[in-house]
Length: 242
Ligand code: NAP
Image (cartoon, rainbow, N blue to C red; front, side, top):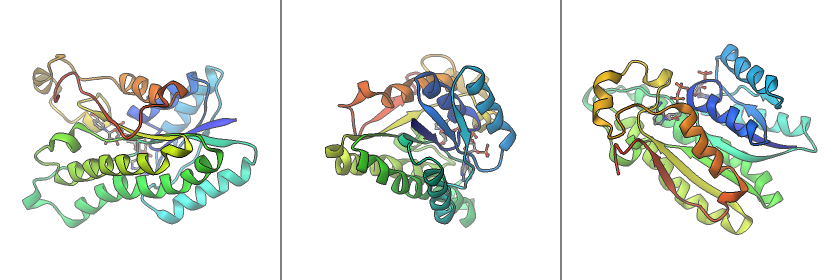
């Protein structure tokens, strides 16, 4: 069977991506860090709709945890392969740079950037051997434009765009594509503390986006139809930044 591994698949955008990719015929590996209840609820929804879903908890920022979890999965699935990887796990720890603590800087960089590196390096092996793969990195408008209070997050997300472009060129001959999506304001746990009523006035579309709208874009990039798109960052932000 062909599997999609979605990091941070237990909530928000990642959960919507898991459900979309399942509807597209892929079996789903739902990664998360700690919220097993939420991950189980996503798996239950997928199974109720006739799909296949498994939980694979690990901290994407731990090299050892990533390698051990993927190794275990591969041993338990000798006849299956991971054809789609969505690097979606991410955290926000906003602060003005002058007040930012070293651990706030490091936690955000470690989760987004080290997480991308550890998971992608481990999963890429199988894609290169099988000569097929789709890697989609969830970056952010913050990584394109820079947002005040988010120097850590903007730096991590901008670096992810650079890595997307570099890796895309490395693996294109093996029919592996690597793209990024850059959401603006999307309704999720990550944005629930924001002043949606006021911020939505800044968005030309006049509203926050939905996780399922990001999932639809990711699902296209994960499909065979997107074979000639690689190294791109596609914004999904209601016109907020063009
Ligand atoms: P969310 O609702 O806060 O969910 C975050 C997910 O990431 C959860 O499943 C969480 O797992 C997981 N996670 C966090 N740290 C992890 C780690 N070290 N290892 C494994 N999993 C980890 O966030 P979201 O809004 O859906 O955001 C998803 C992605 O979209 C993030 O990369 C975010 O930066 C990006 N993004 C979001 C927006 C937005 O407006 N929401 C805009 C632009 C970009 P647990 O459930 O176990 O905690």
